[in-house]
Length: 219
Image (cartoon, rainbow, N blue to C red; front, side, top):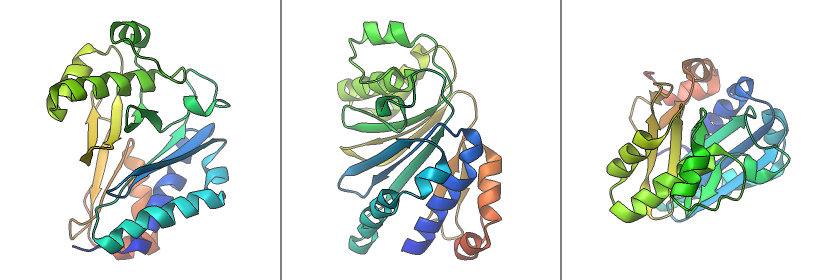
């Protein structure tokens, strides 16, 4: 079914707003409009990010995809720094690697060994970028997203909840080895939202303006 652009916008902003408790050191958003992936990220809190006109311009461009019947995918992140200073935007998420854009919650402790094993050249210091780089490399070799995901998770040591979009695939990958991924589906099935914590989706459903347009939902 068709998707209300204002619902998509309101849902995106509500998800960001209620994710702020996850981390206040950086925030970012990626939008796949069926043609290209656009990314915006900055150091600072989600509140600062929400006040940035560039965020709303990015949403305008991305949500225009609905007008030509495209499926639009949007991912957002608020950062609690674990490694890599947030003043270097390469260390903030979403991370970009090989035509893919990824969000990762968790800590991969063998990232340096994986970096050497796969001869990766990350732009920043994040284990998240190494994780995404390994998966992208396996995908390019196998052309099988499920096999690439399973192979990557078999090699990592640590925790990972991952959302990933690709420039050559019209899918969004959601994967976790901790169970920390929760999904909300609208009554019509036209809108699916996800978060790393159940309470974030529950708070979104308490947003009356968003809930009125979503209809009956299940988390």
